[in-house]
Image 1 (cartoon, rainbow, N blue to C red):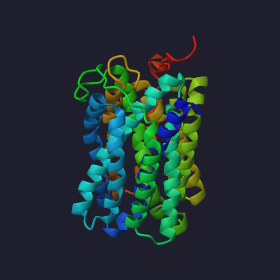
Image 2: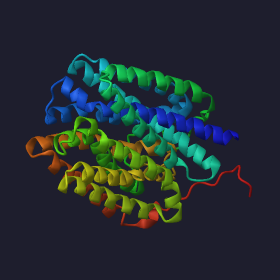
Image 3: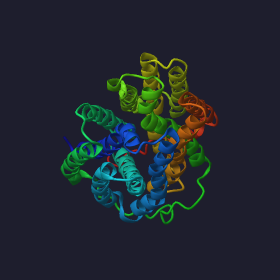
Image 4: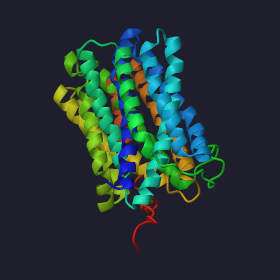
Length: 391
């Protein structure tokens, strides 16, 4: 295995660890709701704070990576992210849980920007598209985390004990992979690195598409278990089935996104993705049975799979901004999908019901298709050729 392959494996391990931590939190949201006896509206409000932290952390992440390089940020952020997870389960009150969720969201996006910056640099060195495969590992970790969560629930383990076990596993992964993380240089292009300026037309369009994709993704992460419990009314052992179907389909879709986008175009992949999100959520709303809702969530997973990796791949090659700044600019807008989506679902469910909330997110899928149907040429940005490749 050559050095580039080793670095790819190591970076993939970091993506996997971050996805595992996030999925572990998401898998126990129904338990957090029960622990504090929260209604749907109250849970929606609580879920607001993690993506709020994500948005707060985005300019910090862009600046830190721009100033100090992604490797240093990854090394510090990874340990902090892993050790913050148990604090969620150990929080004795909402007054303690809220700041922990804000911190967890901030650290999550520090890892998001730094890892994707690493991924784009390695992608350019290898001379081929590989970013979606890293996101596939993140999703595969989510699938794994959901399975571990289901096992922990079956064993009647508390969220705190569950999260401590994941933290220990995460630290092992970090220590094993840290030696191959790229020691990049401080960038000098694209300003100071602080995300304080308006994105150009290309980044704005990509950001809006990513915004709607993140809204659908956040819906699945935070509400799929609740939907199966209260709308589908599945038996307790099948509550996580929809989430597992979604995560499994999203992981599988991301492993083939690079090849499909190379064969067709990025815009065509994104257009089809929006349709899949719409059809999948519509199935779950119109036919809220275990089989149909599971099939619907699987289609949503396939639809969501390509949105973020393709958006980041395009944004990271902006001619106006350095990769870390461009990623942070797009993420600042797109993560408002995470910020607004889950609590919006809770508020609408409080006024109407969860089926109406999920129908709204289905319409967002159509929005992705519409937005990606104009000015297709802006999406056709190739990977930079590697200077190391034979001419």
